Image (cartoon, rainbow, N blue to C red; front, side, top):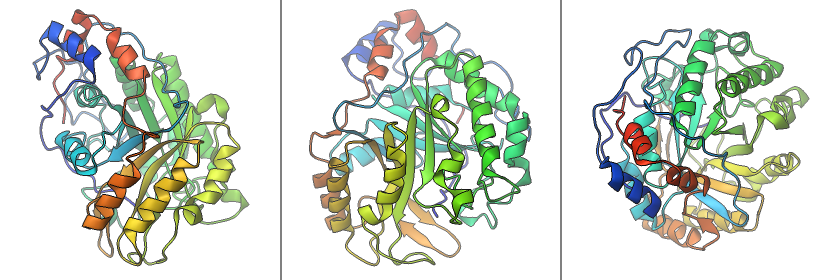
Length: 404
């Protein structure tokens, strides 16, 4: 199973662009095309403790709340994970130039451990939005170290047991995120505790002394804290692994579902590992996705394929990509697909998921996502929210310095 490399803080994000004519006009009024010194509240980046207490930077002027992200009536939003974006936003630009299409969604990971980008970074999120992209933040209660692929026993981190989250240990940290996202006002897709039906994370229902029912309780507690803080601009993304590990009724997809009132979108992840892992095998899109998609369809929520790619070893990656996107095009319940553009190197395995692992694969991806069915324009909730801001609000929003 994939575990991402987590990079340490690398400095400030300074590259911004506008997300459409409405945002350009707003920014022209304020003159806020670069980073400025601005209001900061609370302690420094290292102020969080194991209980999750942290402070955040927030705009000084009240901002309106965006609506939740609704699925497109037709088509599927294009998304990308391409580290170290968004903390180096130029990586998104490079990916888009490479594949010939813009992304409507940018996904990334943030852990809860205080030493590794645990805080909600308003300025970095604004940088993504100003490029016309909705942030999809995968929020992870664990310590991934400097390279998550090298954590020896990632499912065993007692600090992050589900029972602790459900009983309130991390409430201060969760509440700070809720307050910061509410203060920002713009649309955020939040994907907490993904792949919980696997056994490789400390929030997995069968690892770390956990039970699936504790996942449901932890999810609901996180959700309820955000609701209590008025952070209704969050779109909640509940995300499974494409297969349960271990298998069995006690670890089914359904055992982890927190209920319709707590979920806005569903999601899944699944990779074609080919010959690069200890469980090799070349698997088509349908072999990977038919079973989990059939379950997610029963929930009646829009579906996001949140982690998605293939390696070259063991088959024909170009043909795999062509087939995968052709199948997505014929699967109307899938409303967003996030390409996993990353090289993963661990102690015993190496998987290169990037789009340009070969000229043939890159050309196949460019051709596969060219149809207008795949949407590069941002979800309308983002430009509608941006257009509702006046010059003073934009000035406050863009005056906050990045944390990372």
